[in-house]
Length: 366
Image (cartoon, rainbow, N blue to C red; front, side):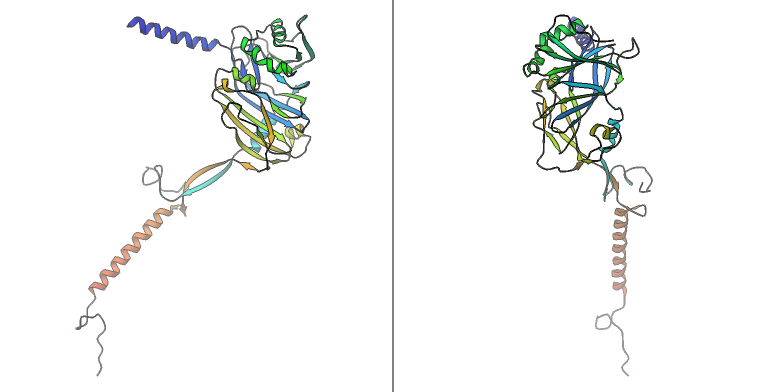
């Protein structure tokens, strides 16, 4: 019996150790490939998509964790892309624009935290290089902040695998298979080497945002590679377009939730992205409890109506008047009224009656 328990404990320990060193290959929009046996995970991903009917721009910001000192990130795109650093002020601005509206709701009867149920007072208150001879075209390369960016074309997944391996990265088998549909559609890739500007420092925390631009007649947000993720995924997507937008389907995740929809007048970082023009902003959150169920990319379309929406956060407060709970005033007033009625009735019963047995006043008719 003891041996069986020890064997079980060793098996569980091995499983936990294995999960610690297994790299997180997929994130919300692309694939992360760490070097060697190191580990990298995307704690949070926020993306902004701007689409004018012809051109699409995606600004992405990753918050990463792990012990990897360098990693590669691959994002398929439907057309030739340009890449530059995004404005870090964009995401705080969008967060402020889409924050929930706070509203107060009052309730009449006291609850557990209110007097007399509580004891409270009653107060109311490094650079990438192309692999030799591999059928991969390098159409551009830039050093941008924490990134070395290479824009690639590839005729098949094996060519992309060779190119990555020549540059010190191992393409997982499953990732190569998931890239094939993009190769078949003649998509291109943005390949990014994440390398801190301070040598030897692990990739950790919030990275510089990247701004990727390409021509596209439809608004598409690549998600297929996220099916390789080993843990539940979440997506926070800000969509800037002429109309309110919605995903065509859930692509294997939970139902997308719109957290904000409305026309905004861009200023600052947002104005820089939109050229200062008014746009309709749609904020969408979605969870993917089982990433393996993801069966495609998000294709977004205009809704039938540009209905505005803002989330509301309600704060419940006990209804008071002058700092005194209304329920107490009501109950107290009712008790006073009952007491007054009782006194009145008792007084009437004690008053003298006339000889005929009727109450009244004796009159002298002389």
